[in-house]
Image (tube, rainbow, N blue to C red; front, side, top):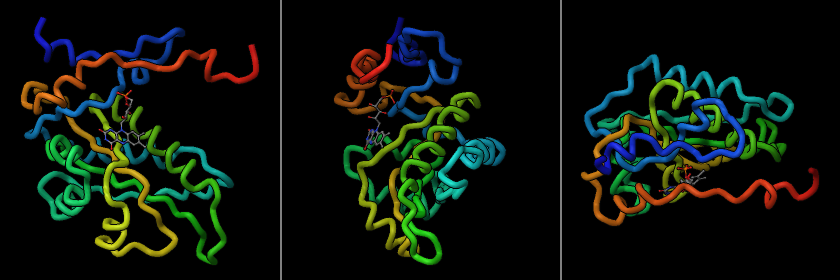
Length: 197
Ligand SMILES: Cc1cc2nc3c(=O)[nH]c(=O)nc-3n(C[C@H](O)[C@H](O)[C@H](O)COP(=O)(O)O)c2cc1C
């Protein structure tokens, strides 16, 4: 079995049966640089984010969607840390995840980042269901993107989600290729549940 074949399945080794998109989801760095994610698929994953729950139904998530080859994609790519730039350029699209941290009157929205994360989680699961892969990142200059996209003061750039189709892991630099085959680990449930059987 080749490395590439192995990497098409990085299923989670779960201790309870989960729905397929949760088992199948993982964060690849090898995306197909020629794959295009069509309009309908992008709309579908954003629709999944739209229907996430939020505090007081405030829906404090905003997104900038940038397909590969656009000026917005280049702007986001330029703001990334070098270790992310080397792989993220192959993704079909980037979604810049933005939290509305205060309302129009300036009243803070304390759950905004929590709600945004939940919306992004919905997006990733729906993307997996659509046969796409996602890889979120925090390694970029959020202030640079805030300025470049001329965002309002009550908006905070929190993360970027790369979306695409799995590509050839052998095209990655050595150090990243090794990471792609490292075991996927999680803490045991017993360590995460502080109280409760
Ligand atoms: C908020 C956030 C920030 C992340 N930042 C980066 C990053 O800058 N670069 C990167 O390669 N991966 C990044 N990741 C991906 C995580 O490393 C990855 O989700 C984690 O190792 C678990 O792997 P899995 O998603 O394949 O299960 C980030 C993930 C999240 C949720």
